[in-house]
Image (cartoon, rainbow, N blue to C red):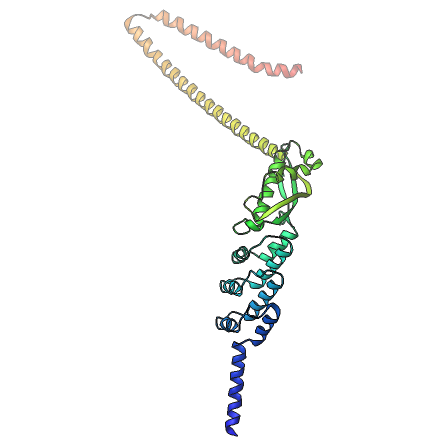
Length: 335
């Protein structure tokens, strides 16, 4: 009896291990669904040993074969899983592409998946184009030739280009290129009113630039969703320029004033210098007169005559000064 109690648990453990490594249920399911021999028992055991989920591979093969995509083998799915791919996405994308008559090979799908792109979403976008807001937040600001700022927002309808999905630019590139095209189109407009009257001109101008080149999308349409009038940038720039010119003129005027003050001070210094020379020359007169007396060139009568002339001159100057002092009083009396 004790041996039986020991044998039964061991048998159950072995049975559980066998059922784990030998998924009989999956083998029966695959045989019934796609035919016996497509996925053998040994292959399922090898998947379990290699840590590949047998159910994931089996379900994928069953779905693909039922959809008529029998060119995909279990080995293909195993290889893609070991490479780090998403088997569910690959299977769904292949089936969706086949139903939508989109050419998508298994190698292309796996390459897209391993590149980090969502291949299922790519196929869905090929069938149902998506709309990208440009910019994603806010509006694109541009200035027309008349100096008026315009703020625009565009909606870009794109469809995935499967052939360029690997290595092609993403949404950010589309947004940047469309924004650049909007700025260029508005900037080349002579008047902001032209843009407001015909916003579709911006769409046509941007659409003809081939902005989807090198990207993973094909641009179907560009629609201007909203256009707002912003600031008068030209007037602000002119006001700033006028203020700058004013400051330059003030600086030049201050420079000229400083030069005039310096010239005035220089002239005052020169006048003082000339006065000093005059005083120095007047100091030499007595010496010259004494020398003339010694030499006999100047007589005593000549000296007195000169003194009389000097006295007469001083008297006239004093009278003239007295008259000048009386004139203001007379003017005030007359008033």
